[in-house]
Image 1 (spheres, rainbow, N blue to C red):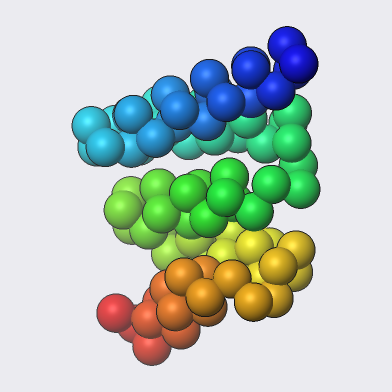
Image 2: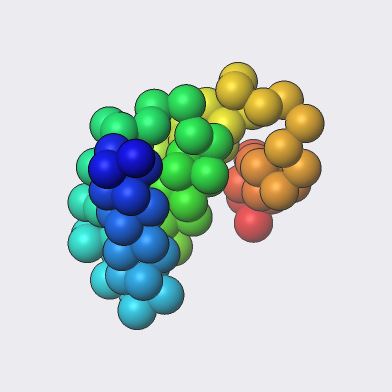
Length: 88
């Protein structure tokens, strides 16, 4: 229970900082959330969004590939990875 609440708090802080365009802080909180739930696809997906927004395309692709490794049917990750591979 406490672990889940901590995860949700860290995840929410990541989202908050992402929306404030503070990508370094967003990454920090998403990485902490990932430590608690390493199989959570949404953490990897949002890390990809952080890296893409911060012009770190290689890292973004790696995170999207991890999403698809965990959940091969994750359509937003498939679409975003395809766009990154096409250079958009």
